[in-house]
Length: 111
Length: 115
Image: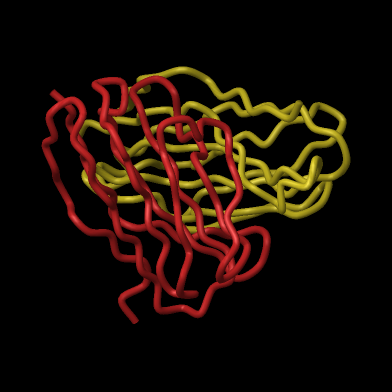
């Protein structure tokens, strides 16, 4: 099992550009999550999904959109990137409501 | 709302020293409590968890006891190693407001262990 994988690992964008981050899990988990990690802020939940075709907002959803068209994939989109979205993004998944399994992260820089 | 407060770092210890990282929480109901660890350049990994009061979670020599009376879940290890150098996150499961059991994280404590 690969667990949770994220693509790409690194990306540099200019302000106003768009991009999509891909998260994939092979554990047949129902729940998937997107977090951002910033220095001194811990992890903050952006969006999450409780099953295929469903999405919901987390703590910091503004400027992001998500889609869960397939159970194993959870996409995070930035339509018009801003410097404030420079961060490390982590995807996670879980079978039950508790333990979450994390991907290795995507480091995004917006210039 | 629910929240987690953990001691700020960084924490620097010598090898074989005793480690305590404090974590307190505010929650309604009876959340589950977790410690996650993040090694440099990696994602978070579950270290241990406890699901009810007085439960003790343990793994790799680390322990934490769910104390409802003090709303705490302090992480301890009797003898740290250089390989324990990482960032440690305390978290609780949010069971209110239809949030589907999402995790609420503390801000993390960076531990550096010197040989």
